Length: 566
Image (cartoon, rainbow, N blue to C red; front, side, top):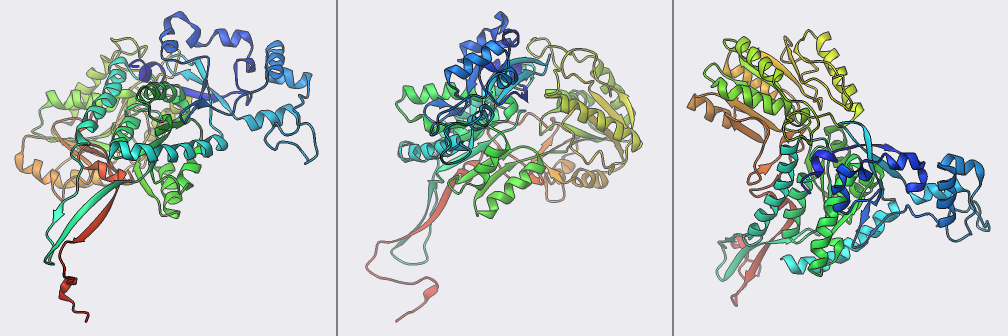
């Protein structure tokens, strides 16, 4: 399982709407990475050339086609050829209401395929070669899965009252899921509400926490295992069931992780729908956001999409937990230990190829040490080992998609237009895959529009500052408020940074990078980052509903506030 985040962090292209190995020529199938000997471990995880992207106790999806159509497409080599050769006939009543008129007996091949749903091919960002295919969920699949999840909750509530990362990061992400499971098991013995003193004699005042029911979890491509783990483990020990929609571009990871979870549930004779999966796109995400049966929706993704999700959930007075963008800053004061600053900035800016929500995108350096820090960083950047992300010696892998490469180039050009100077990197690497040079830009104004824009790429903007007051203000002037860090030995400054006039972020660090959070603390941010908290501390409260309960164990009926009603 540890290989998943590094080798299957993938980007997708929609293929023909006809799913299955018959939708491509034999030559195409033979090039799938899953069929090559060095990737045999994919099949050990239960993955195949084509994978069903829906799990609700059983695996499925709306991609089935009958044998005659499959055979025809195999002979013709593609859907297009098959379509030209034949208008395939499907008897009335078997197409789920596809007939053009109530008394029609047949529907066309194309309409049949449109009904049956979509398949995506996932690609490896290190070489842009196809890995395998995943059949996406239809709205009908979603409806069926929600119903089964709600039924499974009746049992579970009683029981419990494809990315491109380098090897070490991939292993670390899976370890995070393991760790949060351990953490959650212990937490399940400690959840409780306080007993409060009552002002009325013979009365007890207590808080009772109960599960919300069904937790919808929508995760992003950059942490396709860990973020689901944070939500899934805590939600389950709170007594909830889960419905997961991962990013379409990491559908294979979603399927592989769910296969492991499904086996655990089945081995313990529990309904598989406790941890349901619906692979899909925006249509499934929208359905989850609007569905009143989804009692809490946890969404991880961009601020732009998160705002849309929040509005849809709020329209039905539902609950949402939002983990959105970050435009994170590191501040190095004149007394900073540069042996800590440089490697911290390097890891925070370049780790995961700049595709973490906690990636450092702004580096504020006191004017007295600015040039030295920049020179040290350039030397450190030059030593980064670039290559295949599953090579254990590599520290820097590809961007997730070709679109991300285009965004990187656009941001570099915009930085130049706004007065910035590229002192390192700034170009696409001449090698297969979605590789770009890690980039350092100096000379921008602290409030340059490009510096206030979160670009999911390894671009670090470096600024000079004069004093504490101005740099604290610059840290806080962006719309996001996820992670922040200062490097200093000044104890007074440290506590001012942690205090009400310091950082306005959800993660406020001292002498460590902005990324690399531990599971024991609550993870999340303020402002346009969404305000949600996941993982440790009291983040479990998001996944439960609280009741204040007053119990009268006396024979009298005194009213609160001493009111007499006689």
